[in-house]
Image (cartoon, rainbow, N blue to C red; front, side):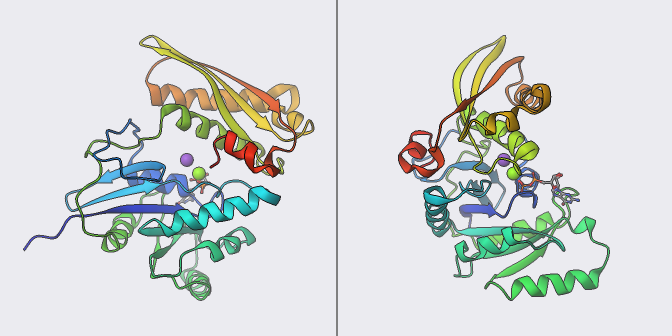
Length: 295
Ligand code: GDP
Ligand code: MG
Ligand code: K
């Protein structure tokens, strides 16, 4: 008797720096290509698709997890997150071994309580004591009705097959939604904007109280290369120097790292220009947020 094919949506969530991107890349693989969709079914933003003999995992992005903000933005983000998680089949909540923080606790009320949430304790390679791990995991398991717990090391590739199997048993039976060789359907512009935002967040995320958004303003591409202009929108004049850093050092580093990633992604030479625009009060105006693509 053969197993039925399973296919469904998986969201990887967690506070910043627990290793979500590392885990997603380790599970999906790093190559990104544009998807040819079998059916116009999805209302989710697809991060990547992993197709195997018996299952297809469709990893989706949940907006709102990497930004810190207040007011209308925060309320809207919580709503967006709750709705998005209600629509996926499996939620993977990633935490960092031994390092529980307020950011982790904030997510708990947003997690679905119907048995589809798996707790993933990442970075086990960095933990010395097994006893401490046991106490740490027990403490977290008591905070939410998780249906499974899987300790992993996304970086070292430890226990990832086990995690995939835990996810697979929770996927509904059904035909694959995507062609087997496709990995993402997000337009390249979006991927690049996200890439730049991630660099900014890494470098100055702690200092930018309302975060920022990245808008791709120009995109010209042919066989010989790509010319891209990206605009980073911040909330206040005082955020500009934070982003620039001494002598513009931060911006140079952000642009240079993003450009390196783009060259790998597009497999051609890239000219990238990144500049800053101040748009006052945008994070507290939902209409402005929608304009900037946060819906
Ligand atoms: P995200 O913000 O949740 O997407 O986290 P990232 O994937 O960007 O990872 C944040 C940092 O944690 C990076 O420096 C990663 O290299 C590191 N990291 C991710 N997974 C592991 C792991 O399994 N073990 C260790 N030691 N470090 C990890
Ligand atoms: Mg990330
Ligand atoms: K990412």
